[in-house]
Image (cartoon, rainbow, N blue to C red; front, side, top):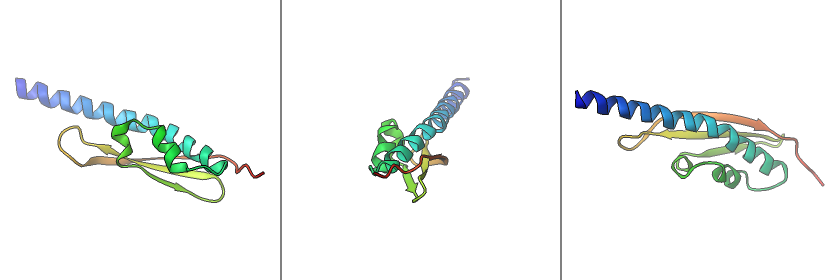
Length: 97
């Protein structure tokens, strides 16, 4: 019975970590887009919006029209590696001047 409880607990915790990654990916994308819109460092802004465990798999892509795309690797709760990658996008108009 104990192994089943441990496996279920690990699966539930993995679902919590994945849900958090999905939730904060939008905030990180908005932070990156805002920073890019005013000429700031988009990747650094996205990193500040994430908890430390999710920063490892971060990739930020920005283009000239104000769109930011953030890719976050969801870490495994048991072992090393990642489960999958979550992607979020945001757009802010450039603030020239």
